[in-house]
Amino acid sequence: MHSSDDTGKTTLHAPQKDASSGLLTVRDFERAARAALSAMAYDYYRSGADAERTLRENLRAYRRWQIHSRVLVDVSRLTLETEILGAPVSMPILVAPTAYHKLAHPEGELATARAAARAGTIFTVSTLATTSLEDIARASKGPLWFQLYVHKDRELTRSLVERAEAAGYRAIVLTVDTPVLGRRLRDVRNGFGLPNGLVMANLVDAKVAAGASGSALHRYIASRHDASLSWRDVAWLRGITRLPLLLKGIVRPDDTMLAVDAGAAGIIVSNHGARQLDSAPATLDVLPRVVEAAAGRVPVLVDGGVRWGTDVLKALALGANAVLLGRPVLWGLAAAGEAGVLRVLDILRDELATAMALAGCPSLASIDRALVERRPR
Ligand SMILES: Cc1cc2nc3c(=O)[nH]c(=O)nc-3n(C[C@H](O)[C@H](O)[C@H](O)COP(=O)(O)O)c2cc1C
Ligand SMILES: CCCCC(=O)C(=O)O
Image 1: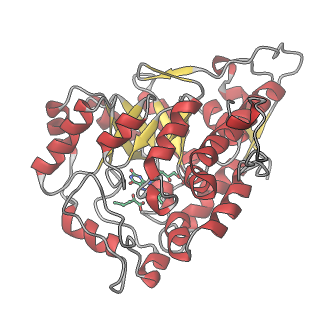
Image 2: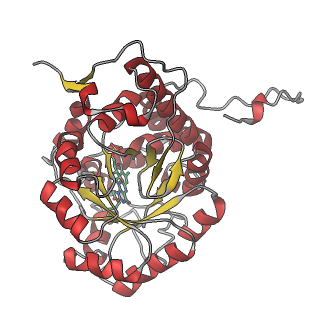
Image 3: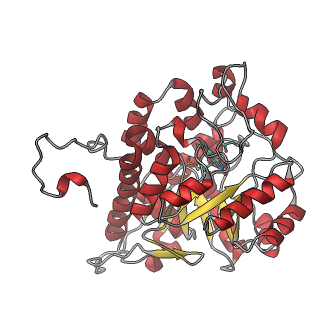
């Protein structure tokens, strides 16, 4: 990758070492992020709902699978490039939508967008970004998707979609697992909200300031988001935009069929990083069923608990077209801004490339179901 300190230029000062250069894994980044963040911000990013059973399950599910390598396959030329809904990406690893990037770093979503563009992948911008969707689009040459939360105020919802379309976003990701907000206990105890100066930049009059007791985010969602959202609204949404629509938060085959019938262009298997329904299944566990139900009609993506390149390989072997990263990107951002996000994406890319080489898979197409088996009990 290009960085200002490998140009060979002599400077008066020793080149500033990138703050993330000693960090080798997503786990290293989480540790560095924790040191850099306020306890309130770290807790918000890290937490799952309630007892955090699903949070642990998302990670454990990956440990239940083993990779059975094919040997003596020429892996001297690996290709990780692929295409998702017509957008070429350098690898099957995308950036999931997460709220409030300025809580992690002053450059916020602009840093994330630039890093994703440099990594050659898609950044999904959250409705709850702390930078406006237009500013993000201006700052990034990379492909962007817009994640939509449907508000009770449908004109506001419509205007978000129209703004995303006008700003050049390439898809709408409708999150369907959040009629109400899950209960994240730390946020309640910490009185979670945004510090002074940070705003939800796409929603001018919205306020989630910290200060009162309980989670300000929880109160905000309860008052503004539309818990009546149903399949009928998916048809409405399809009618107001030309952009392809992905449904994010599906864990069942029957919902997959309904989504395809409703005109979804893609499915994201997700339990919202275990932040909504505790006791939801691990996403990797339900992925094969969703893939079967989709039957190749639309791409199936998955998120939740992806921390290693081998995790990506397992998800692809079980039928995913790509994975998305939530917290790992936030850890990169908190630890070192744009450079940190880029490092996290490059680490996952390198780990995936190494895993593919060692497993005898020179291309994404060569990764098949026979590559993985459940670990013997
Ligand atoms: C701090 C945080 C904020 C999130 N904000 C959003 C959001 O605004 N919209 C959304 O659809 N999903 C949101 N998610 C869920 C992510 O898109 C994704 O599903 C999840 O983080 C994937 O799991 P992982 O963090 O284990 O990679 C959020 C997740 C986290 C951790
Ligand atoms: C409606 C949810 C607000 C942000 C979010 O998705 C999260 O904190 O998980």
